[in-house]
Image 1 (cartoon, rainbow, N blue to C red):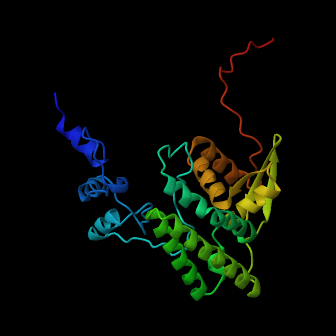
Image 2 (cartoon, rainbow, N blue to C red):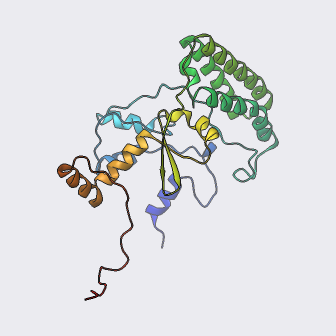
Length: 264
């Protein structure tokens, strides 16, 4: 028996018996999929669409009266390393050449993240300098997409110079680096650290590899999750009567009930 609904769904994500696929596996989200979501869900506040492609979901949400948030932060290039045989077993010679042509960019970008904080450097320079760097990045990414090793080499050299120029400008302007302050807590031999600024994660981890690092947001989210469960409700009730009370330990639930014999 042929199930047409399943076949259509499989075709939507690029799987079919003929084996033909869209170029680069580009399958935009159809409007009816967004409509189906909105038929059972509502959203409040600004909405951000990750991996937005050409913004098909965003456009449909705007048509339904929703407000989309914007992301203006300059990001490092996002690409899949073709030289990684684990994920790209059929990578071509030119794809691997492109990979190695831009390797120096990766190395220096990591150095800048360690020095200033993850993705912080473009925020510490002038708008003009950041814009030039963004343009260089866009052209390098285009060369990667075109699978052009020679152009990748040229564009990578420009991006490397751009990183060096931003680094020098940030130094000249006396820019402040991401804070590496950490609040430490040891619990039963485990060392935890709450970072003041999560963008300094790489630098802190390099200095304190034994420490499990958390951002303040992660701690807040964990506490909110705890508060919404029975243990959290109990904690809130106790603190209302005893404001100075503090949670000292959380123990697992007993596997068997309290039914020990009374010794008298």
